[in-house]
Length: 178
Image 1 (cartoon, rainbow, N blue to C red):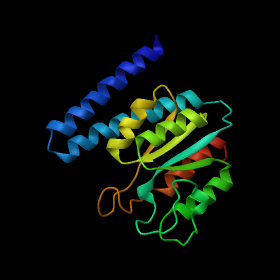
Image 2 (spheres, rainbow, N blue to C red):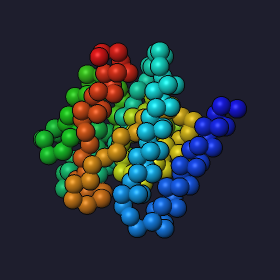
Image 3 (cartoon, one colour):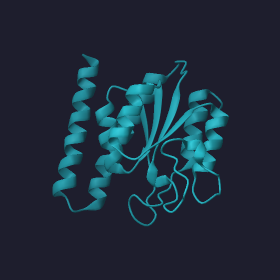
Image 4 (cartoon, one colour):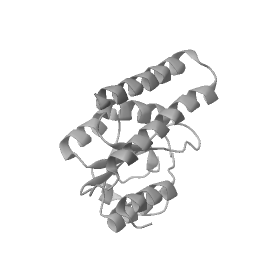
C-alpha cells in the first residue's frame, strides 16, 4: 500500500512536469516542478537506504559530461578517459576508485534503463538534465535512484558539467565517512 501511495505522488509530479514542459513558457516554474520532484525523490531514497549496507553503488552519467570533441569514447568504458582535465570524467574516475563504485556513461534513456536492469545496483546516483532525470527516475521507480541535475554551461547536450562536491558529499554520507 505504501509503494502504491508513493507511486501516486510520483505520477502527480511527473504529470505536472510533462504538462509544464508542454504548456508553461516560464522556465522558472518548469524548473521548480522538477526541483520539487527531485527533492521528494532524494528524501525517499535517503529514507530507504538509511542504516542499510549497500554493496553495489553506481554513478550513471550522461555522455554530454564528456568534452564534446574528445577523441576517446567513454560510453563503452569510462576507463578510456585519459584524464586530460578537459572535463570532469577524470575526477569522477578518482571518485570511482576512492569509493569503490561503478561508473557508467549513457547516451540516452534506453541505455540507462538497460544498465539498471542488467547491473541492478543497490543504489544509483544519476546525473542528467532536468527532463531526462525526472523521466528516468520516474521510469525506474521503485528502484533507488538519487538524482543530481547536471549543469548546462553553453547549450544542452554539449560540454555540460556536474558538481563533484554534491557527488562526493553524498558518497561520503552513504559510506559513513562524514
